[in-house]
Length: 224
Image 1 (tube, rainbow, N blue to C red):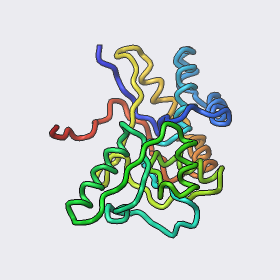
Image 2 (image 1 turned 30 degrees about the horizontal axis):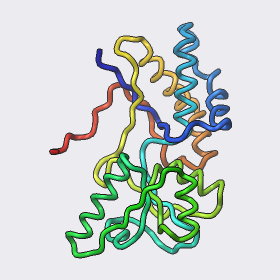
Image 3 (image 1 turned 180 degrees about the vertical axis):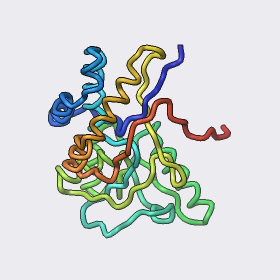
Image 4 (image 1 turned 90 degrees about the vertical axis):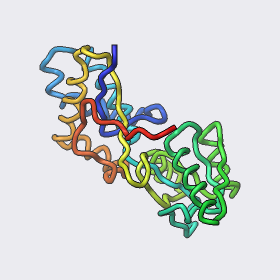
């Protein structure tokens, strides 16, 4: 049975931290549409989704470089000849590879793409100068910049590429009765301001969306 999807105002990358789980728990009493149904299984599921949702926002990816780099990334030419790390199998890897190929076609140097198994290895490489930047989810980069104080965001772009806005969806079984509860709960904390407060506290206000969507359109199909 095909799943139904609900797009979230955010999505997960690393596991939610205790403080993020607390953000979700604080928002829970405000989820009136779910509480009134008496469907506490849905309520618990929404709590988990919110904890993950508040951990990283779906819309953008970011280039993170050592603090004081004096470097800004807006287009492929800005990364020509640079050594940049990225996680394998991600949208950002696809975009970085495409930018590197575009540079080669334009007669510029390719990007030297590096891969690390753990975030800590990536951050050590960044501080030691073994890489010039890391390309990853914008919320993860923003959180690391704010907490470590050793790096800075030098460029942001859509997770779907330059011409499209990326969207991420959570899935649930079709006709399970949960998809509308998820959407209603998330939309409720968007409307009452809880969502905006959490994003502002984490420096992510620019990543906010206005509402969640049920079965949003996917990205355009590309020729393989």
